[in-house]
Length: 175
Image (cartoon, rainbow, N blue to C red; front, side, top):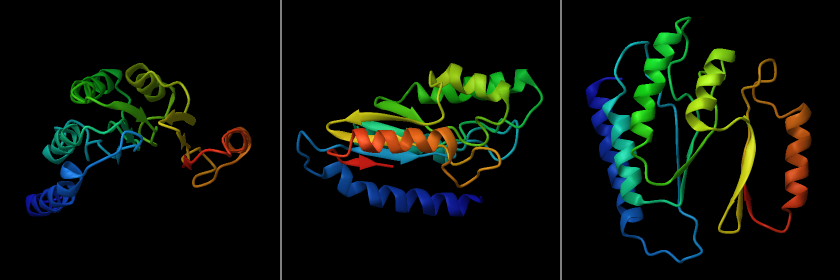
């Protein structure tokens, strides 16, 4: 992505944020931010400035929670040392976030046992699908990148989803 496209994106993003920064909310409103794809395009390059700006803007909004939709790191490497560097760099940035962050693993995060272990180590999340409640709203996080089932919710995850929806049918849910 060239600098002109990044500048246009940041400008439009900042315009979209203006109403959120000045909006009045009720105590029971759930304010949340969703973003992801923070990985670098190629191994060894720095994390984009645009991503750092997204984190800064998110902290300004001060949401109740953040959902990161995966691909924290590039991850496609046979080198554990490279993976350590990538997760260390991302961990430093993520630690600047004020709200609670829920992580959805992407294909770069749960690519193999090594990347899965680093993802779990950084996020503390052992499952690739889960739910949580926030101010009476149930958030349901699913994994649509299961090998040989991309784009599908099947098997154990499907059974779990049906059970969660049944348990929470009286409450609003977000998938």
